[in-house]
Length: 169
Ligand SMILES: Cc1cc2nc3c(=O)[nH]c(=O)nc-3n(C[C@H](O)[C@H](O)[C@H](O)COP(=O)(O)O)c2cc1C
Image (cartoon, rainbow, N blue to C red):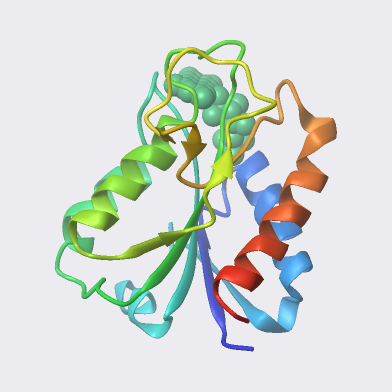
């Protein structure tokens, strides 16, 4: 299996816990976990297959550490890179910005011809609006540990099965 780079902040709580579960599902040997707070920028160059994890913060925004990385990320070659996104979000307190960070990240990467994999159904979530919602599919996996933690393990399992198939791993 080709190595996957799993990028997220190790200082998060739920995003980091979810990343650990995703790594376990792929098999730890198949994944490098990369801390976006301390990584070398060149770490982005090492992988064809990449997973980015981000919570949504500040009413519909990326956390500052991702936001600050994006301008430099514009200079990388994204064409041909196979990217999947997962996001932590809260549908009860933020129904008008549910998981927006995943949508923001997908749009950013697509400008540079990255291919986004791992879309998931919006069924089973209750929200009004999400930047990650495209034709009733999220542009990644959205996990709501605040309100639906009991569903997360299965959502992660299914998503990893889906990605292995979409990526032919
Ligand atoms: C100040 C603040 C703002 C938030 N804004 C949003 C938001 O706009 N949309 C959303 O879906 N969730 C929002 N959330 C919920 C978090 O994304 C959610 O609790 C997530 O599980 C946090 O993950 P973490 O522990 O990895 O930081 C917000 C949480 C906080 C504390």
